[in-house]
Image (cartoon, rainbow, N blue to C red; front, side):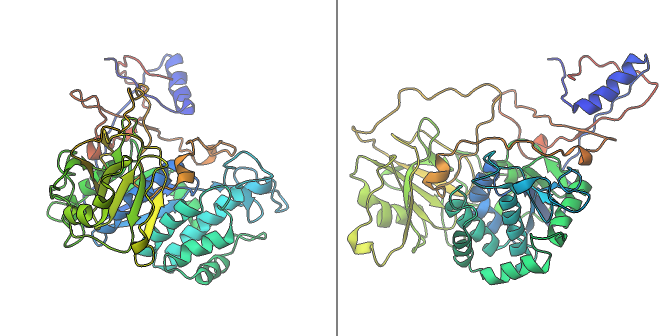
Amino acid sequence: SIPAFIMLKQDADSIKAVVKANSNVVMEMTSTQIPKTDQVEYELWTTPMDIVSREFLLEFKDAAQALSGHAQFTPRVYIYDGTKSGCRGVDGENQCYTLCTNAGRYCATDPDNDLDSGISGADVVGESLRWLCILETFGYVAGVEWWDYISNFIEGCASSEYFSNEKCGNDAMENAGIDPQVVSQCIGDYGGLDGDVPNKLLEEQLNLQQEQKIVIFPTFRVNNQVITGGLYSANALKAICAGFALGSSAPACGLNTVPGPSSPDSSLAAPGVDTTDLVDGYVNFGRGSCLDNRGKMYSFLQNTTTTFPDAEACAKAECDKWANLDSYRGFEFSVVGRCTCLFDMDAVSPIPESEAESVSHDFGVNGGDGVVSSVSGTPGTTCYKPAVSFDTAKVFSSPPSAQPGVESSLVVNHSVNSTLATQSPSSEPSALSTQSIIPTSEFTVSAKPTDAATDEPFSGEHANRRWQVLLAVPFMLSLPYVLF
């Protein structure tokens, strides 16, 4: 096949100008591997409104906590520099309406393209600052409290109805063991969101954006190296494990590898939890969330009071009580000992009266329907389907085929609520210019090499290619084709 590269137009124009001037061009490709360290540092640049990041954060929570002590995660928030984008007037007034805070200094695009209602850009900036202050409160490291808050917020407050609801946000913090007053004090101490004053935490994010040349989100980095490809838990875990120096790998990585779909992942399991057991009456369907043949997750009922030592106990003590229901589809057993019983769409079984007061349950409605046909393949949980399918089970005749060249979105574990599950991913509008922070001396081309045997993208360190193209004159390098 003919090599092809995609680059920014402003960089391509420079190359074309040199070629048209009848001068020679030298282009050099350099592939950078993830640096090896004893303790890996990784970070995610995102915004509270990015759907891909929301799904990743929900799915990766258990893995991140299993990596604690060996790898340090630092979340970063992507905001726009209102001053460079023309949103801050010469007299210090906000000229971009509800997109910005602090007299036009810090901005975000409007998620619903309605400046007068719904979630505003200023709301997104405010929630971003709350993420930073929770980090600040607990020592700049994303620990249990930060992850619990993010999960609570995404599941309960991320909809347009509740995103800027103060009570919802406070409840999400309190349920994560965070004092809302402490966070509110932090926001004020660093400059707040009102008035013609800078906010030190948001300024730091803008400076880091420029220093690290972050121009899109989500951007995932491991040991200061940008990781390309889809933001999936399996890819992220492989990249993190690839960053450990020889002899210092985290137990969650096994031997610097992630078990394949045919080998249930037990490396992330909490002490005393066995995820590898075979369960009588069930088929161990592999690592990840259970999916129907359209790739949809099932509605669920999860015992949040009890943790179970193994999948057998999960089945016998918790989910087998519903095995005679036509809507029952099996269960998922997580690396932290959580047991989740699965049902067809809109067919979650009611909680038994005997457990209504003594056992706490979480539930959610998703679009899965019919027998289990596949798994998501992401670490953190294992799917078990009944060994004998019920005659009345509904099976969809033919799943829609994937569109060539289009990445499917990350399948979220069973913590997504019905509101998020019905939302359609959409790209945020590019209402603000980021050209001021795009580097002009080099540019990055995203390449996604594929395995010829499977036609699947490589993951981990092999997929993390950063292509730098350098211009030099006057040496001629033959280039078959370059896409401009």
